[in-house]
Image (cartoon, rainbow, N blue to C red; front, top):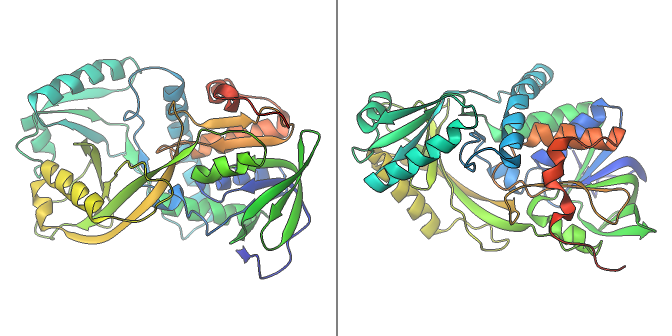
Length: 387
């Protein structure tokens, strides 16, 4: 990894990507496989935004109410991840990404919640997913630590998880081994442009790097980049706070992803339990707060009362890049010949990482735009102002 102060930047790359999170690295990985010269610019450190904070859920049902563009993206994206993980684990022998599909339980803790969950179950079944309804007693037979307040549950056998931090490390290492360059602590602060084309990215401390194509994959900071192009991008940060807990060894462990009371519980192979996540509109504030931690703990204990005995090992926060309609912004920026957006993934960036990498790489290399990108057109919200 190269910091701006270590040596002079190269003057040229085929593609410059602003943002070195899981989306930026996935695009770089697939571009390099096609022989493209790629350089990433990162204002802080790799994965400093949403990627480093992600829980690694492979659980597409949560944001869905039935078929539609987001469902197509999520199910396709999740289907591509096992192949990418296998490739990366073969190339980066020491990385354990821990992809597993142990299944998920979505819980209802009162009579009204049972009705809501059963209605969602009917809509989810139109997606062609294998799902089962469990009574509260059946759910507790599977997970004895669940609260007696649980009155029903939906079991989704295909859902699972991975270690998002390890996925990010693996894809970045594999891309760099293949020749991708990344400059950390190298903040872009402008663009040199002419006649609808970006000619170079300007940085705070090391001047310009010229490019044939620019990809903006800066997560919650993408709107700031698009302001240089007079394009109002409706991407805003939504803070998510998370915890890592550890139960006393005398208690049984959880075996499934658990969703309920507005949170999720993710049991890890190392015996820890990830609890997430808040959804807070607080701008670019990355603090972990007492209120956020207290709320997560209260909801977690409502699902699993034994968590009152757990040790809090760690707390952290990330900023999700959200859009008004919940769909990412993927594809060419209107009014610009060589600018591509890959941002606005919200809480599903990990699930869509391999798919985004493949689709954006294919578009850059061939000009072919997959039908999956149509609903993600960056021009669907606004038009650029006159330049």
